[in-house]
Image 1 (cartoon, rainbow, N blue to C red):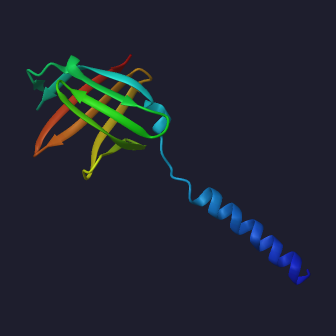
Image 2: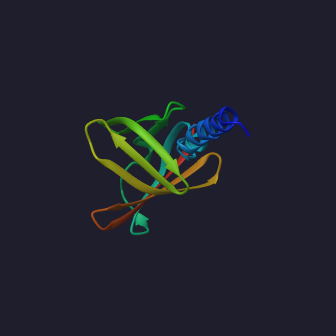
Amino acid sequence: MSAIKTTSLISVCLTFVFLFGCQSENDNQKIVGHWQGISWSVKGQPSGRDAGTVHFEFNADDTYSASFGAQKEEGKFRLVKSNLYTTAKEQSEKMVQVALPSPDTLIMDMNRAGTLEQLILVKR
């Protein structure tokens, strides 16, 4: 094989490696949409918080917004298997475990300073 053909073949192979190897693996599209809380428990017991005031909006461009009453948050997100990573503007990344038992139900299992909490949201 000539040196030019070998160089061309190597260039094509490297292009494919960079194009497909550098893409992030995530499942973001599974949670794109508007979600509203329906249940919030702490250590398996009702939390007493109004889950209906919790809203998440996950967008196709990997951005999100969240609100809980008057508290608001915006940033970037990524869903990798059962871990949801969020990075609010000017804050550190946070991670919660999630489950999608159906396309319209999202369960977030959280650990708030050692206290286990679960938030169940439905797609609106």
